[in-house]
Image 1 (cartoon, rainbow, N blue to C red):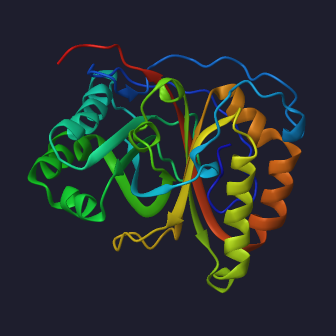
Image 2 (tube, rainbow, N blue to C red):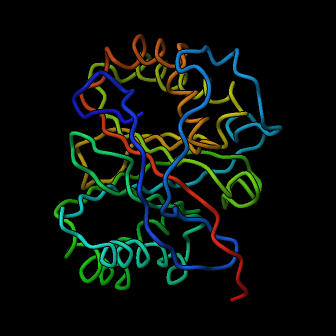
Length: 287
């Protein structure tokens, strides 16, 4: 589902190419390889898709823990080399080992194109809002941006929001078998001002409930109000970890999802942009 900015159609699919990674113990990042063709009928209702997993997404469980989600979308220049791209992503990925408070990271090359021309997505999770605030002013992060990101990019946007996940180590830190593989889907939305209140809440609740109802496809779902003062372009962020590219396309190609998007979201959206990328496990290595 690559939702075009200023477009009501959220169903264009592309296959990704993603970068090499630095290797560390029990961490995950996207790898470079093509994805298999989707399985199943594209318009099959989700209720008719047989479950292949035993676990529910974290939105369907009891006690919750607040987390703070950070999204960056980048526009790399067209002539960026593979070496430069790998350097850019590797440096962003290793920020988690240089700064406190980052509990999860995933990043990669976007699948195909979107009308905003974002080429890469970066997702980070922080335990506390203070950690996220310190991240932006950390000299190490500033150096990474100045020396290894912006020389290769002509655009960068940040969105931050507060959300909740299951109060357990594995879903908080996005560790374990369920997070070894999958597809990271990032959706940024600018809702119409007069939709704030019940229409907006109804739309987001409907999307969350659909994710809860499909644990065989979705590992984790978070969403929230953007509080980044430097970004007025989007009001909300959504991150969904799918179990596979097949799960991603089953979900976004289902009649349940399409009907929900058409009836709940389309009437109240001013702008959207999204991308997704593949996430594979990094080899285990003792540090």
